[in-house]
Amino acid sequence: MQLPRGATGFRHVDSPPLATVDLRAFKAWGHSVGHVLDFHPAGPTPNFHLLTLRLPSGDLSVVCHASLPLIAFAPVPFDGSFLSRPDLAPSFFGFDTLTAEALATPLARADLSLLDEAEHRQIRHWRPATVGELLFNHWD
Image (tube, rainbow, N blue to C red; front, side):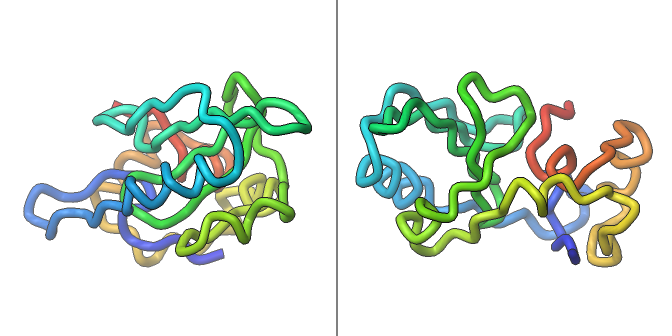
């Protein structure tokens, strides 16, 4: 799995600003899937938006990377673990849905060549073990 620039949510001060996801679309898709119980926007930390939904099958967290159109499903409360919900992926049009298996990929098996030096410094400091820990983080 090749991770794009901005995957950590960090950038070098001289690098171009990171993009931002369409937050309105993310929230709208969430409302179309279930009852929104809670929403926490990304900040400097965490680097992801967190939407809590009530579905007929139970409550579910949806995490959305702040800079990349990537989402993942997780248990409530979000504890850093992920769930695969292929049934819900089409509901979030315009976002790539990551599976629990992809997010559990050891970071040593990921291609980090597109990340800038500031991101590599953060990785050396925080030492994430998996792709999920890198993409959806609380680093400051």
